[in-house]
Amino acid sequence: MNPESSLKIQALEKFPVFMTKEKVADALGVATHNIPPLVRAGLLKPLGHPGRYCVKHFSRDALAEKFASPEWLDKVVAAIHRHWRNKNARKRARQSQPA
Image 1 (cartoon, rainbow, N blue to C red):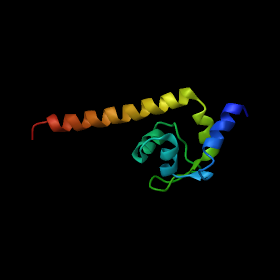
Image 2 (cartoon, helix red, strand yellow):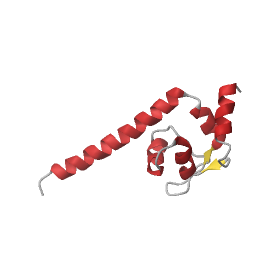
Image 3 (spheres, helix red, strand yellow):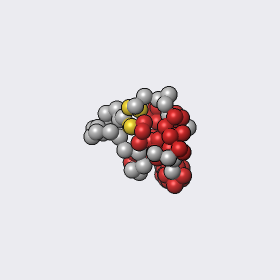
């Protein structure tokens, strides 16, 4: 383990080993509603095989390794932007259709 990754793990030590989406959002500094699009994009992988509507848990140590990668963080930001860009485009398309 390199010193930089140990610093990332130390930054996450206040979080439990199993993190819910609320804790992951807090660690990433994003809103909680941005976590499901990251899971769908394959950037976050829940532990085990949770069902669609089940509470998903994430590994603190796996997240610490990902936090050390600027490329992964870039993909996270791009996925969040892409999600909201698509969602807003669908909303505008619905509003522009005549009733």
